[in-house]
Length: 362
Ligand SMILES: NC(=O)c1ccc[n+]([C@@H]2O[C@H](COP(=O)([O-])OP(=O)(O)OC[C@H]3O[C@@H](n4cnc5c(N)ncnc54)[C@H](O)[C@@H]3O)[C@@H](O)[C@H]2O)c1
Image (cartoon, rainbow, N blue to C red; front, side, top):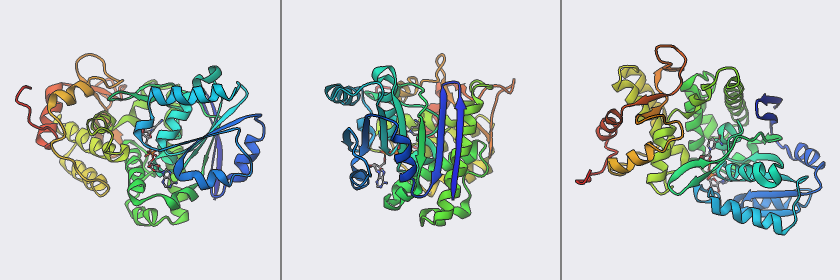
């Protein structure tokens, strides 16, 4: 079980390796760098301490949304400067999506860009966050507001790391796999694979990860020829990002995207684009992985965050709208992957689904 390929996009080239026990590949590729800065999740301390080489600098972090900040970025950069890390160094990032997003942003700007090697260790990071070159940090309550597109030199996806991952984190990864299947990646999630996936059967882990990586890489590569297609991957994220922020980051990304997918599908249904039966199927599929928060915040707070979504143009709220399973609504010219939806419609659906709390001043 080994899959290797190179992806080329307008912003660079990345070598992907998917398989079990990839340490030798990693060691060989990293041997070309005079200095290695290893930014890693504390949960992976044992793995890092057993690496057959000693990184020049090791920076352990507590994984989680709160490390994705400008302050943390500056703090790590200061440490790298204090150790005189130069432009020929590589960053090796080991962890979930939060570590990878932060470390990749640092790699992109440090000495105007140094080499970046990613070792994702959560299902979500393997199937989504390590793919496609996006990085960034949150700014206050606003998710991923500052960041870049930067191609890692290499991504090593080793499902062995999933054996220490708690069930809830496996479920967070399953959400992004479901998302891929609803926006067009037919092979990305199969209901019959859920139990063996959560039971961490090696063949199912491998085939599921490969299908999701291949799907996301294909969408990202297509962006060069079909501008805007990458927005597809944002299905569930406009609402999901607002929910993460409104919960002060206590609702994890995967759970928030699951809620976001259900709400955004309900909005597509309210607009007459998406059928009741498809909506029920989607809600049942992602509902298995999530708990539903109620009365999250008053509309004014939702509105303020939803209008800070990066895709916004004008006063409407930008959303990816499903038409049917595996098919996104592209508008009358069949060329738009994201659509502005009137604020009142979004408010109505959030209210009907009990996401709004009372606020008499609104
Ligand atoms: N750049 C992108 O394209 C992209 C795409 C999707 C998501 N993201 C970002 O990814 C982040 C979410 O990623 P995540 O779900 O991996 O979150 P995370 O990094 O917070 O990891 C989740 C939890 O798992 C723990 N963990 C990590 N690896 C482990 C292991 N092998 N064993 C045991 N515990 C382990 C972490 O310490 C953390 O508590 C969000 O910030 C999201 O915005 C980025």
